[in-house]
Length: 309
Length: 290
Image (cartoon, rainbow over all chains, first blue to last red; front, side, top):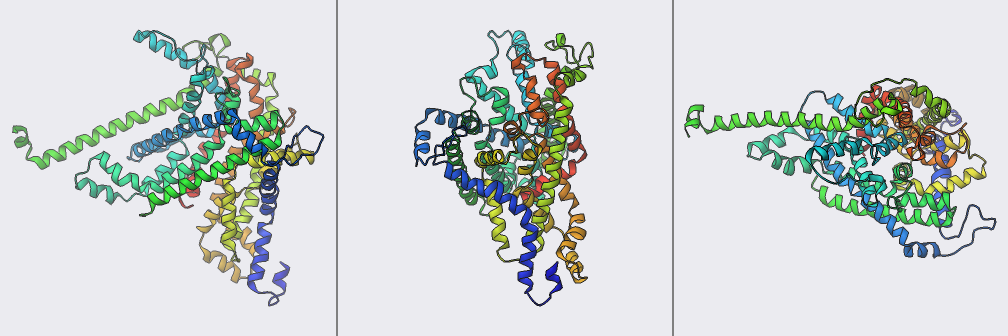
């Protein structure tokens, strides 16, 4: 404001920079305090034996944390769990495309269906996870009473899975819940928007050339959706690599036999249960590098496949 | 062959076939919509119905309660300080929302409406931080807040959430869609950037602000990790942490868990239904024009 009172003393450019700095200041302060500084801090701490409870100061241990990590069988187990749960991503993306294509056919009640399908996404959180934990309960849960009923009427022997209590079924159960949550969610909304931007002339021309519905989708619509798919894949991979903590903490406590512990959960255990903050920082940084590499690969791949645009 | 002759040649036949196919596709479409919708709704319907059932009926197969037990909802509030958790969640989420919208809109204005050197480079740097996993900064942030004695306080829950690169990005995209001529006119009239921000851009950006506010409120109301490590006592504890009390592992009553879940989800559902058009626009703006 003061600058306004002394015209000519400073160039408009400098004046603008000062004003812009003023506008940016609150956000920038927060950015330094809660992102930039902690980022550097955690990188430094990843090379120390920092412990929350220890009275001694953290010592520099070089690459020891990273060495331990790469030789730790549990780390690789949890890496595998994370990757396993990420197999739900292509499933839910396929479901979202399909739902979006159906909804874009000018059927009645778009707003109603959209709201209904979005319900799991908005409510996703502790309450929803506890609901699913109850649904999956092997003895009393509604899912298994449905399955038992179905098996009895079909005359099938055996019993339904123990879901979250079974090492083999816990991950698929959590993945299934994830797909159920995501299928009609944000990704579907993005596909709906993208579909409304596909010029109808393109599909009409293909239809006149004798292309059937599948061929029209495969060769006309799907390529038009490439940028959206690219965005969704990148975001899902970033989310998937970091994710899994909340579900597992609420539904299984990481069990049975640590079969639902993801890398995010591992950081929580090391940092906030065992208080080995140095080691936990090292895991977080390895995760960061993996996320970065994956995003880069996605980027390259995405560029190659959407270039024609 | 005789049929072809009767209906007037292959072209007409093909047209009829296409019409029939279209009708079949529509029917199949509705069947799929209803089927998926049913799958989506069923867990929620089960939750709602169980929340009204007496404990003895919980494992029964009837979808509707035979005896409606409304006081389940009151029981929830007797077993845990539900009202306190509710208040804490809403209070913290409202503060975070207010501060985040304020700081993001200021920064977004600097990126969208002021010309300054390296502006777009700094903005890219901002965007790059979106890739930093929250897990990396979590531990140092926790440690710093411990040193500042903010563990187990409202401030400790609110302050780290008050700044957002995503919010800045979303509002910048929104502000870019506002015609430049409006603030130029105001500037010619002698208005400073602060005036233009407050009197011209903020009112016009209202749909964007509402969108960000809804996103932020919902995300914060549901947040779990941070309050889990930050809160130790009931007087600051938020709803997601409080709900863990009803975890069936500890032998709690399922009907009460469902009543608590219904109460916990209700504000989100209401907010979504009321603000739906902002929500849908916001998601599409954040992604498509990125």
